[in-house]
Amino acid sequence: MTEADSVPSLAGLTCWTLTEGHAGMEVQTRALAAALGLDAVVKRAPAPAALGWLPAQFWPAPLAIANARGADLTPPWPDVLITCGRRSVAPALAVKRHHPATFCIHIQNPRVALERFDSIVAPLHDGISGDNVVTCLGSIHGLTRPRLDAEAGVFRDRFAALARPLVTVLVGGPNRAYGIGAAEIARLADALGDLAGRQTCGLAVVPSRRTGESNIAILRDRLSGTGAYVWDGVESNPYLALIGLADALIVTCDSVNMVCEAAASERPVYVMMYPGKSARFDAFHHAMRERGHARAFEGGVDFSWRPVPLREINAAARALAPRILAARGTR
Image (tube, rainbow, N blue to C red; front, side, top):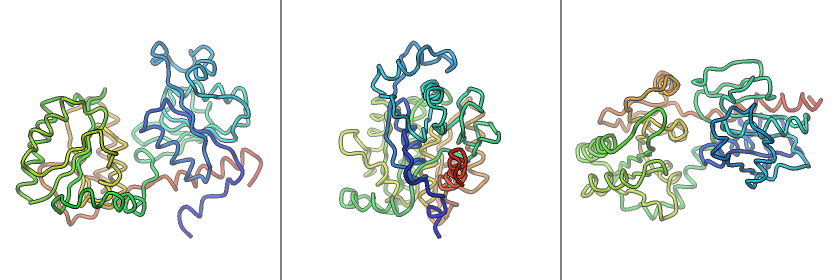
């Protein structure tokens, strides 16, 4: 029996996922629904700027606001609702008020009384606990080695000319925890160029939307002459394919999602650390190193290292499915 087979069946139940529409949040809700065996209807409710930082309990008419922005949160209500991100909390609680039988699961710390949700899936570094909390080390996702191999197969010809061993570099950008600007990106680019020369390896660099055009230009300029591939944001996104093709990965420290997805690859994962100001990020990176999932990037890569892969979503689904069935009076 596989991990997926051991999740109790929720066949016949309806499910919505709801986020503000950010890819990193939506991928978690969709992955959890799939792990539970649910065919989810994807809903998106971007929050108005005026309400973006308002605590969920103070939102006026959250369903009306969400529906005015295209969410279509209307009956028939789902059996299961999976949300992620602080700005999806108010609409989720409004659905629960309208239809108490909906089993509401929130991913991450909702920053309201935890008992207002039926279950919460929270990363360890969120620092919350309770009878209804399922804890994971980092963010959840649906990546497996077979899926990564399949993605790699689709793009293999496109990247056949890159030198091997291949180092895939996942680059984020500034956020509230890390001020990743021109100096930090230049430092990364120079370290990558030095790595490619010393260890005779190929480089494939995948910036994110947060990286910014000026930082991408720095990467291109400083890596010119190394044979590095730097995604231009125009061609189809090779993110998953390049994780699958990688012999090792380097990830900037600003994204828990990217580090966790890289850690599903069964390949060496190194994190480019920058000075930050977040105890939560510090706790996450420390735990990843302590548990053997990642190492800090200090200029070199050990291609022979085989880290412990990080895949927690089936464990979360196994914990949640019986709770959903129990809430419906089925065991």
